[in-house]
Amino acid sequence: MDMRQSPVVVNTPLGENSFFLEMRCALSPAPVPGQFVELAIDPCLFLRRPFSVSSYRRGTLGILYRVVGRGTHLLSQKKKGDILGVLGPLGRGFPSFPAASRVWLVAGGTGIAPLLFLLSRRKAASGDTTLFYGALTDRALFRKVLPAGNYRKVFSTDDGSCGEKCRITSLVRRHLEQERPDVLCASGPFEMMKEVACLADACGLPCYVSLENRMGCGMGLCFGCVAKVKTDTGWDYERVCTEGPVFPAERVVWEDEDSAR
Image (cartoon, rainbow, N blue to C red; front, top):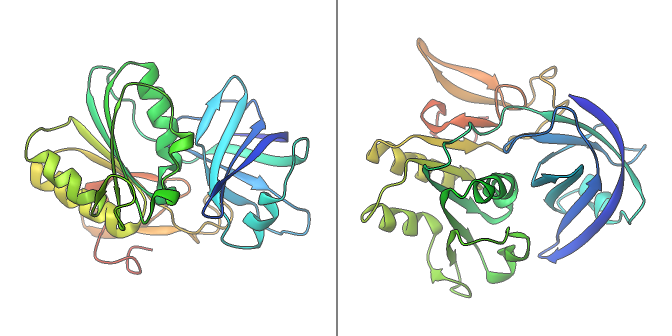
């Protein structure tokens, strides 16, 4: 874990009240896909804010975020040269997959954020990768920040403005009837990840999910981000900021969003 004072390089609006921000930030150790950082955005904000690492290359750190409260509103106003306090990398990321493995990534809306980094790493390794990406509308599909490459892309929107008019999990189910990956990774709305986990379980496939529970300290001290997970004796709570945010899907208790937080 490292702490840096990092200047903003660019803070690009993407539409749908969302932004892609890049900072000059050489963290040690370097983050891996699925990890996150905590940003000190403004001296008036008592708590740092957690954000998934969406990209990291040559000492430049990128995050994708949506404006949902005071912290992200202040973040959206940052300009080139403004300084942000960065703490990270934090949490547990996705495991390393063999380059030759077939990996399917399933994202919903801004849930694409941690998968962008994983997608870049898979692309660099020339892996067999498919991205399933769904959102409410075409404007909520952040295709501008998708890494270039010849990996397969499958899109869906609720209104049919891009790709098929359906939920992205419907397309995952349809493709599973014809072919099978070696592993599934999902990030997005809780119910979407739950459905991906069920599909993986039915097919006997390993699956990893990135949970998005609200975090306070981000370092396991406050226990404000716990998720309900299965254990050998039943179930228990584990901290998403330290034991996660990436969990094997079969460990998560998927009853409903409230009971798993």
